[in-house]
Image 1 (cartoon, rainbow, N blue to C red):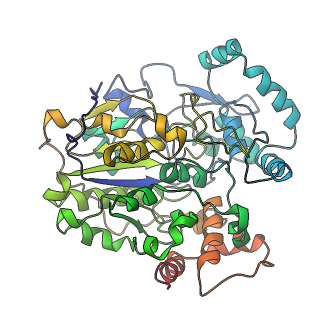
Image 2 (cartoon, rainbow, N blue to C red):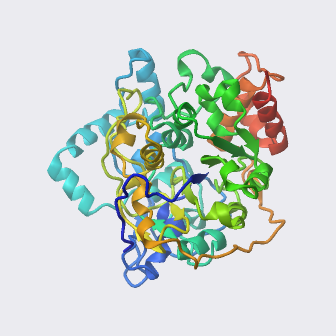
Length: 507
């Protein structure tokens, strides 16, 4: 077990924090096999009977090492689906001073399942009893395959198996090479049992303002629907710390309206500038860097099914190599690699309870974390091994706030475990880390167009955001929501990048 330590102020050798957040994979699927190397890791024990889930026909599907690079069907991972996967209480209308009761109820029903909703609610109330919760924890298996079949009733046994399957050690060349050499966080949970946007908001702002839904139209970004919470970027700007977001096509972080100011937009750069900036003097590199993957196109590298996982490996290697190639920068940097949520794939650890970050509970209580996600800490100041303290996405913000002396963003971030506890400043800088991760150039994946012919919910939401923000192509409100679904299939990364550049460079 990796030894952690509390640091005193002024002893942290880290001057630059770089976060790469990918999409929709569970810990068991991506890193669970590393229990074979680290017995203390809470993963997959290949020497015991494999864990299983059942489909509605009673067919068992086991955890086996045959995960596919391209998963044809994207498991559902909206709030209602994830709550069913983990056997948790359904979403019910909560309190939110920004929205009226009728709107909260509509949002809650939209995120829950209207059919059988009252039955689920009754079951949820019974499950709140401590004894019942303890019994459930003791026999937690989840309903991941059953929920997949609920979404895809005509799926094949091979497709259902992919919900349970995992990558064996070495099958993910970049992620696994870094896992061998740096710190695996085996109890890093997504911040809520829900989809992409809300979890990304928790990393950048400590809250999602009570929402879990994904936008479907440009009109979703006006009036009370704005995501106008304070961001970690605001806190860093206020104390003179430099930050930058690097993006491939359209950055999801631009959904946060506080980043629409001209000063904030100047801190957005295309990904090709990352290597340029990383090769320069370390004191000119941003204090905090957030990297967004490519979400669209046949060469999308976000790791969101059905995108080819090998392309995400190339991105991980690219980021590591750029930092590692500059000795001065490497000696002062912590690279955090994580995933926003589990994407509907199986993980055997039940998500624990947590605290609501604020008074916003319009669609969910936010008192339970989401499913575990694969996460690594990469730096010459962390050890090779496993760190098992409970973390979630707000642990990144907690570290930044503690490190630079600013107030945390909300109660969740205030109570989160800081990543700084893994920094081994007293042990000295390591000199045994890989100098480079080799990867094949020109990797191509099947892509969402070739595999499924339909966009994922993140692509629809990003296209709606881009249409709202792009000064050259504002879309009328009367354009139906279905247009975004049709357009997101054929919209390419170049077109989205053009929209992003027009916005960030507009006066």
